[in-house]
Length: 171
Image: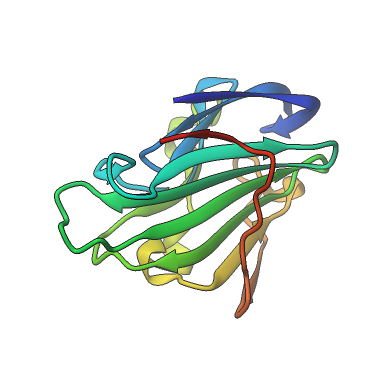
């Protein structure tokens, strides 16, 4: 995993956090394992071949977490490239660039602080399988990222090219 320290407070479920932990399986923990944001969660995502990696870049307005990964055991060299972007205003954006794997994944927001029947927003129930979302972006707004508030999602399709320079990378 990678550990990013934000220079600003990121508010999730009404609480401020600066520590973000990135995992190659397509998710991050916000502060602790109690809070999880997953743009494309799949336990078989892997960084052990070719040009695959996970990495992040943080500046004064956003934190960009990027996965360039393969499915473990898939010998087809199908690459999946996606990002999670956290903004200082609390917005959360999922960006899907190249999604070549024939796989199933989940995208969600989760907090164990929420009541047990509302522990997660299953974003994929609205958007579909993240592996089918090539060239698509979804943004969740902070006023809707809390238990029982519903979810306001804006989407964008088309050119959603990725840019990550001066990043922290692990492959």
